[in-house]
Amino acid sequence: MNQTEQNRPRIALLWRSEPYGHETPTPQNNRLYPLFKALGDLDVQAEPAPYADEFAREIHERLLAFDSVLVWVDPITDGKDRSTLDPMLRDLSQRGVWVSAHPEVIQKIGTKEVLFRTKHFGWGTDTRLYNTAQELAAGFPETLRSAGPGVLKQRRGNGGIGTWKVEIANPSMADRDPLVRIHEARRGSEQVEVPLSHFMERCEKYLSGLGCLVDQPLQPRTDEGMIRCYLVGTQVVGFSTQRPRAPGDFAMAREKTMYDSSEPRFAALKAKMESEWVRALQQSFGMDADSLPVIWDADFLYGAKDYQGRDTFVLGEINVSAVLPFPESALTPIARAAVSRTLAARNSRDSKR
Image 1: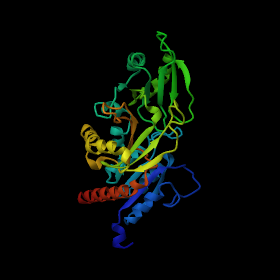
Image 2: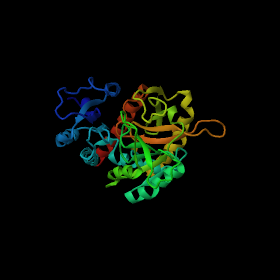
Image 3: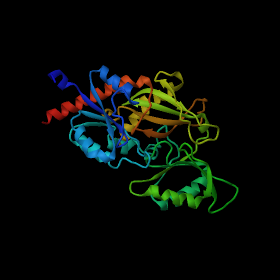
Image 4: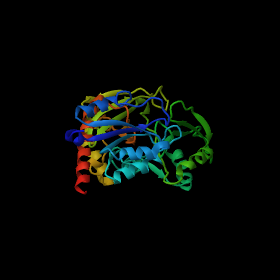
């Protein structure tokens, strides 16, 4: 290897894989191929790094040879979580490998708790936080009775797992333990009716350890769909939209329609994100621009129209763990940001040696 090749940034793209998969991943045979190509166009040595908990130690040793690791791993996948992966990523970071998204960043802004911590932003709503079963029992039934249908969300999840629309089945009945109608946002879930006390007992498992439950009022314009705003650091790089599979269905359809960042219908949302909300997020959590992931997104529902008839937007979630797919317009900004931060991290590491 010549000196020029040695100086090329070396970036690993990591995603969860089956521990004994039959096909060896290459830059060309996976969903991240367009990003591999964009990185290659910038003269970067980008390599796939399939991850499985069973081989965490071997993967850790391999990744020590890289300058940075870009990670796409959901919080929950087929019963697996990130309890083995995240400590490995923290160790890599401490040893000078730049990681995006870093587990500490995920803990700050990539959980549903951020909806409560930022409810005073312009994207917020009347959000409540329950840390214990006692808090849930004291607050949630009264909120349902006084505020109407709500959405209860576990602290970490993806794909609608642990996010429920909850409403009293017969509001006219002043029952201390009313029958509630619940519908999980997970695709394929069915609407069911159970006593409220039974539902809250089922939710207690989400309150152990660092767990919590976040309670938001159901937005009346949910049937109009969701807007996903994609960002690279502080810059909006695109949008996508999803709608429910049918009116009144709580789960969003799988299909997304992608838009680039110049889409006129989202100009107001883009301006709010770049001029106000991202900055407020950074200040609230003590994060500089380079701490933000190279690709992340914020999901919005339509709020009530303002007095001039303009749309408002309510934050439903921030995703930083595994943002995929994303608009084609995001490819070059992601690649450039990854290279810039990789080189900065490598220079900082080398200067300490």
